[in-house]
Amino acid sequence: MHIKILDKYIAKQILIYTGICILVFTIIYLMVDLFEKIDDFMEAKVTGTVIIKYFFYKLPFILNQMCPVAVLISVIITFSFMRKNKELIAIQASGIGIKRVYIPALTLGLFFVILSFLLSELLVPQTSSKAETLWIKEVRKGKYRRFFRRKHIWYKGKNSIYWIEKFDGKRNMMEKAVFYFLNKRFQVVKRIQAKQVFWKNGIWLAKDVILQTKRRQGRGYDLIRLTQIQISIPETPASFLRPVRKPEEMNYWQLKRFAKQIQMEGYNAKRYFVDSYVKLSFPFINLVVVIIGIPAALKIKKESIPISVSVGILICFIYILLMGIFRSLGISGIIPPIISAWMANIILFLYGTHLMLHID
Image (cartoon, rainbow, N blue to C red; front, side):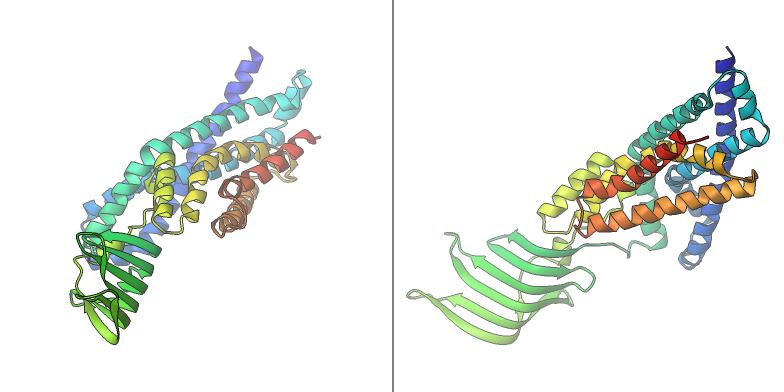
């Protein structure tokens, strides 16, 4: 009976402080984000309703991001105050081992892991997509798009095949492109090789061109070198573009399929493979921060809320730093994506476990 009362007491304290921290951090996040975007809102002359809807749609993503920080700080505050008020000594005096008080905190950490995963899979992708759509439609007036710089494209048109080494969507420009035009018998009747191809005034202009055309009589091709030529094809720049989607706009399976698809189309998809594994690893940081937060609280020499919050922020900063380093290594291909996504969690988990096992 006493154990149940103790578990409820610790869980209640952690939940109260977690709720307060999430509220405070969310308000700060919204204020900073609002100040960053206020010029865009004013320039677009959007209404207050649009602004409220935009931040309302972003709220699930913000809550999911703030949850680990709030859990960590609430655990540190709870156990710091329990030590300050001699509650831990009283618990030990009653014959309960100090490590028994970890259980309600670890259980809550596991609960927040499940909650964070469900949020990131079921709610965050939908609301983040709505926020992005609202931003593009109302603020950017549909003029803003994010696209990949595509490489090594094989594109099949009507009676034609194009190979493009690189396509720059911002400048609507192809670099080192080859166009094959075919007849009904699938024979090449014309081949255009160009160093650069620009989209200008609704037409494609090719520079530094080698033009090969099949002879009407006899075999072989006639070859001509030209400085510039117009290429008449029905495709526009939009035909070669792939919009960039933010990871938070997709759940794990959607992000994994998206990464495989853009990889097959010739894009660099390493970033999306890394982020797909981060979708799985990030929720578990809610449990890891509990494991590292308890010993951190019990080792703080002076118990106070400012010091507890400072320690929590320092641990979060270390996690963000480690995650950034390993994510960059994964994107650059130095380490596998799955390792880059999980390594920060593993390091903090091992360190936290070591501290918990050696608490005096």
